[in-house]
Image 1 (tube, rainbow, N blue to C red):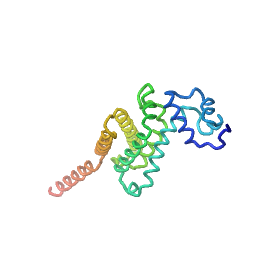
Image 2 (cartoon, rainbow, N blue to C red; image 1 turned 180 degrees about the horizontal axis):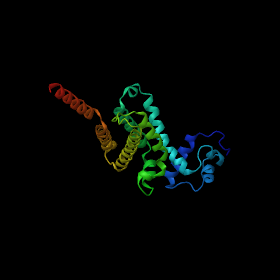
Image 3 (cartoon, helix red, strand yellow; image 1 turned 30 degrees about the vertical axis):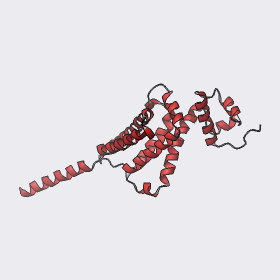
Image 4 (cartoon, rainbow, N blue to C red; image 1 turned 30 degrees about the horizontal axis):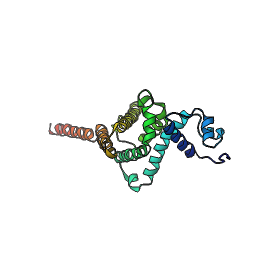
Length: 218
């Protein structure tokens, strides 16, 4: 049988996921994997340096597909940061659910916590950049070093929240993963309430008003 002349990245990803689910392990070698799927070994290296790099790319594809769907929605483009993040979560977990067998195998068959899992490295890179682009309102600290620290803490907290949600989803046994939907809504709402500067700004404004009025009355 003639080797495939044209090969897309998605072809390799699909074949790899199928292999892993059928054999419950990585292919023995890139050579064997290429031979089994009728393409040249060198074609694999045009896209990936190793199976580990390929696994990282799969989760990046889940992210990329999520963003592609969201950006086609005119409503999404008008949302505030909170509702954009909610939309991201629901769409991202739809992608994960469509590939639940593979995601479950990958995340549950690695030792250690999700936080230290190298397979999620590219996903983290893309997700924290996404969080940065949301321009979530935070307290204006007026000092560059503090602002940088604040933004870094915000991104790391958002990443940890995504990991916690993924763990909840992995353990969720409810029909259609309904409990995960509730978890997403409540956790995103709670996280934004914690960083919402409006109540604090209102309190500061009120304090300034009282101070000015007191000075005026005196």
